[in-house]
Length: 114
Length: 401
Image (cartoon, chains in turn red, yellow):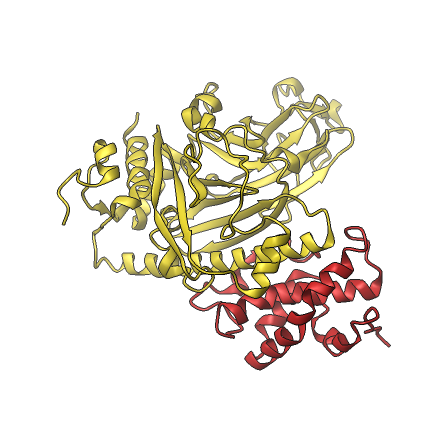
């Protein structure tokens, strides 16, 4: 079975791992586009109070050398980076309002975890 | 309305005039064909960065659709970068098989080999080996049949080519002139983490260029991603031959949102965050204005280069047809040192991507509407002076011998 565990004291976020701990930016972007307003809001509300703790925790490890549970936690935070503008700026809209078709925008770096 | 030369930039650059601009150059296939020959096949064009081919034997192949070619850029064992058409001297096959708009590779011996019959060329384009050479006829001279060279030069780490087949062209430094001096000395290489996007837009390359070459649109188009950000007007507009530059000054009226606030405190990645010390060249934002956001420079014909504190980015518009353009957007920041900085850059980059999605949203509509023929001219305000100069510079090239 896939390991969905998170580091100690972050266990309450474990229900988010399966959907949101995605390793690539393209994957996180697709998840955001495919989510409902309610799903984005619930994810944001669960993550925001823990964001600073998460960033302090991942900084205990050198850049790019996270153990698997911390890596999953970090990917959750990266998904929040993707989702936050939609809650904070776009009134919860899963798409960027009045924008070009995102599917036609090719991110040359996006398939890798950048 | 204002009398002629009442306005700041009209007064500073009276030669540019103040009248409306014809839209024909954006919609005419005949104009495009002339433009291709007189501008794009005659100008220095940015095709890469030296870091992309950092080591001897590294090469990059860049498609140039307007010229129906692709160029190989290769770093030799001596560190020198040379450029060639990606066309084999034997029967014209592509020497390097391409995998996309840009193809990268490396050969330790600093040679490239055509897959078709195994002809080998060195980094200077010379033939190193022809299999079964003894079966070729006497009138084939190996030394005179290297790869077809392309004028290639480097400015501030940017690799440029000029496809003009003439043996002599204006040197790159001379072509860039004062524009090259103005933007020299910025730590482009140090801010080396690149986020890169591309897409094909169904519009003329100038429609895309023009949409990015003013700040008039910020309050409307970016009301989503950059709310409460307003252009406080262009500053320090300068023209250097066909090139042009301005300071974009933005007022930030709002407290950042919660996640943005955390991101801004960790790393410099966003254009709409306040920053302190300066890494800018002395002629850029010379008065060190508080509201300076970035320098927007156009390197004729098709490169927008923007520099800011801790960030630089480019837009490039490659014509494919009179109504089709390959757009490339590249955003560069200092590489993260910590995981939290890495997270902050992700946030800044997502926001920037979204802003570019807002920018590109108008372009195809503009093209379609222009092609209706309903309007024969466009009207520019004083702070759209870069667009006005763009059409002027273009006209000069179109009428040059």
